[in-house]
Each structure stands twice: as structure tokens, then as C-alpha cells.
Length: 136
Image 1 (tube, rainbow, N blue to C red):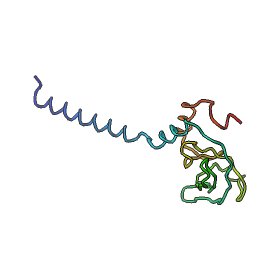
Image 2: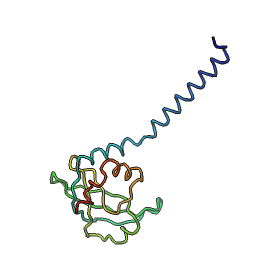
Image 3: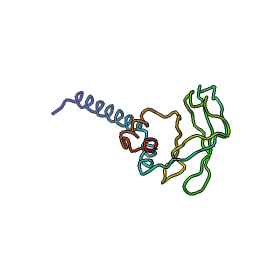
Image 4: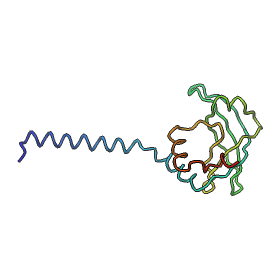
């Protein structure tokens, strides 16, 4: 049998381990995983017109607002951060290459867009070279 002090230590340890496990679970980027799962079912390539080009000084980001037409015929507008190089080359009313999920055209990404490294790794892990940018 355990002494009362040992039981208290074991309970405290169990509580700490439980909270640590819950913390780790809360850090999983479910939204990112969900988007990549939807994209894995297929992406279509399209051209998007650049509507606006601006710099977000508070975040030190170079952003573009672009508009594209999904497979359902609806126009969608999205604002995203881009690499400095891609941002420099883009001009308002010019076209950029985008890829949108065929099952959910609201989910898109553009060439030169800044993305989370984990998201890029996840995409390559899940699909390898079966990405629309490699098929052209």
C-alpha cells in the first residue's frame, strides 16, 4: 500500500501529465490539416487577377488581393501574404497563377504566397509530386 504522501505525489504527477497532454493536443493545427485534406482530393489551376497590392507595415508582410473564378462559376476574392520577390513582380490588373481545391473552391493558394512551413511539408508528405504545379 502507498503512504498518503506518495498518493499525493502520484495524483499531482497524473494531473500534470494530463494537463501537458491536453496542452499538446490543443497545439495541433486542425484547420491547416483540414485544408490540406480537402486539397488532397484535387486542385485545379486557374489565373487570378490582382486587384490590390499593399504592404502591411505592422506585420512586415507584402500582400496581394486577387480574384479568381472557381469551377462552380462564382468569383472569389482573397487576400494573402506573398514573398517580397513575388510581390515586386505582381502588378495591379495583372494575372497570377493560383490553385484552388476542386471540392471547395474557397480554399486557394497562389504561386509565391507565403505559407506555413508545416503546411507545405504536410502537402508534400501527403501528395509528393502529385501537385498541380508539377504537372504543367
